[in-house]
Length: 294
Length: 201
Image (cartoon, rainbow over all chains, first blue to last red; front, top):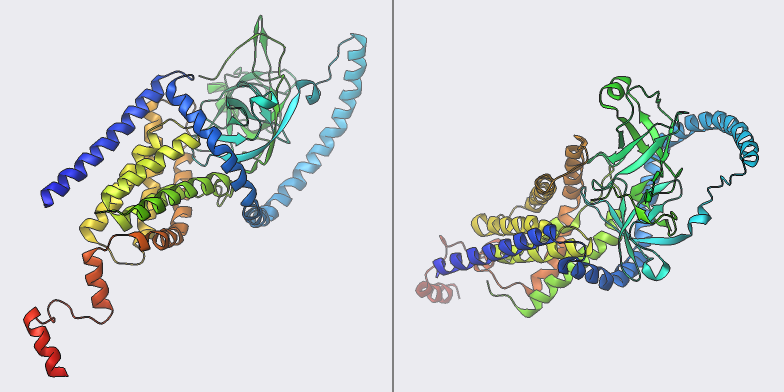
């Protein structure tokens, strides 16, 4: 009797482990349009209304927790924000001057340099689900192909770039965040020289990004803004329009910069507390896009 | 262990609700910079209450649901949760721990297995991005936060499942001792039982 139980237990265990391994290898090996991916999209579509309802019902709970969390961090933030405010006021005065000069120069050469977000046809969407794992930084939003959302479109938050749409159903979409290890963004440092590199997440440290492939002699200092480069090479376009803010250079160590060409960047958007994002449904007018996503 | 339909329904509802609540609310609440993860705690609790086979099966099902609902690589979370459910169940079958803090320790262990296991599998599948040592800190903080909520989660799972759990002879025996019954050393034999009762009357 006991032997029979042990045999049954081992058989069940072996069976479900085998099924898991088969699923893993099949999923990993198949294309985005494969049957397992299709099933996954179907499940997401079915669960989406439930998640939406649950998100609405549980929003008071989130708000209460958010209130306590915010209060806890408020004291530290006040000191940081005061310091940042003083710095920004000084920068703002300088930028105002640049703006006036830029406007005059633009009019002279007849170029429309307006980078209004409206020209990218933004679609607002609520975050209905987010992924807690350290390895999959994704959110699900309540706008999909019915609203004109397609894969490869960038998503922005209130302060800057959030991520890229990587999966779409009719009513919702999955946005992979810039802190996900599968995403890379070509980014430019606003250091006066326009040095650009590849922005990657630092796995395990969601509050930092790493800007790599920078020129070794680049004169980059802490506090400089990092924006999307939005390159175009022939028919190839970047996924992202140019000049969308991404973050601030938080650690530009000269030794690291000259030896490995990297600096650390803090994202402007708090990716752990997203509630609304905008998806740019017409980010570029190009045809074929250069992809940095595997 | 024979399971009833009521038990299956309760386990399925519990797993589904846990994943929905996790995705819709818990994952957006940040404590020490990380979010709690209910799923490994629920799998661990089911294993501790219902045994290894049930624990492993629930781990497989919940892992699959997590992978499907959160658009992750299918099979990864299932593999990890099978291990968590199975070993929680084996602990119950081999040791039958009765201490009240066992779910806390098991919750920490389950979260550590989920965090470290996920990292190992991701490394095996290939990671292009640089990996920070802070990953270990994040895993540690998640273990800490999950330990804090392990006891309430276990209590909720026990409350939901206990009415539908099949009666376990060992627990029935233990309950009898703790509620004033005699231990096997003091208990009279079946034959003497009647005599003792008649004498005491």
